[in-house]
Image (tube, rainbow, N blue to C red; front, side, top):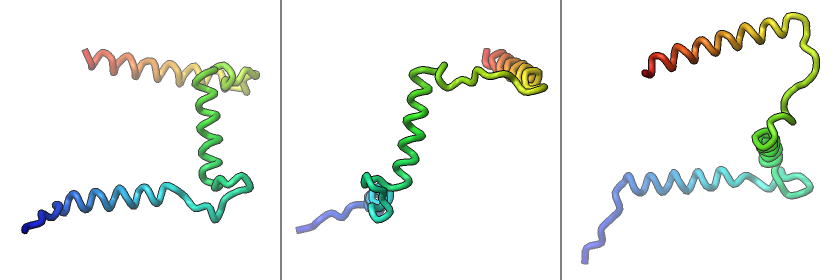
Length: 93
């Protein structure tokens, strides 16, 4: 009876998937008091702040006074970005 072996590509793909899954699980050796590793807790806090800004954008905007020259710089940069986007849109049509 002949047993068909999987192709080397399939074996390689399975090996890569297995290694990727094992490496992304992290180590509990360096875990904090809650059991989460330092990496996962920092990435979780970054994700939480990103999600809060998506749901309520005004909570992430700075409403204080501009520093000297900052307003002019911001307006110049906005004008450059608007012009670049306008040119990109014109090329697209």
